[in-house]
Length: 100
Length: 143
Image 1 (cartoon, chains in turn orange, yellow):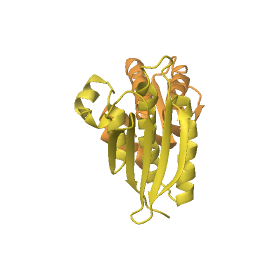
Image 2: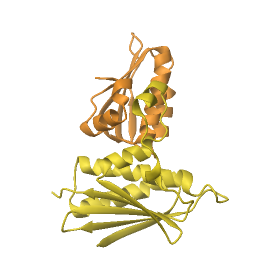
Image 3: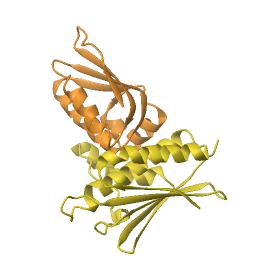
């Protein structure tokens, strides 16, 4: 898994590009790398275009980030593939998350 | 027919070896796409569960996990069998989580096994020779 963190826009929006799988091996790193860049971020956009799949460890990490962002603004996940959508739908995360 | 196996210590880091092993099976069979991702997720959930909980009764919390893959050419069903010597535990007895409640409370317990079940056609569990033996069964489409 790789994470590419963009620059914080003037309107406090940060876009992060993730590639690979967010699984039991990578979820913690995914969460901690993103968490450490959330100072002053009001809108976090995570681009999942290159995310292959998410396991429950990944869901836990996403839930953590979403809770942080609920306190300071909003989080959007965009460009999810069919496999990720299936996981979000079967676990109710599609209702919890802001998906674009 | 068994065609490959893998034995590793039950630590999360070893999931990288399990992933490589599984990818090699997909390559050998000629399986691609969403079905592979579903099996990666199911295997992740089972391996993680064993790594976290099977050997909590031992001094260092670790033990051995062995995986075997079997493929039936007649019906294209791939079986992945996990064995561990840990605490007897049948995850299939666990009730599926109440999803709306989970979402409302922002909790996530129990989703792993639930997801594993959803990702394959069936899961079997037996306790034999003092081992937890769990089998994932999934019909694969070969390219």
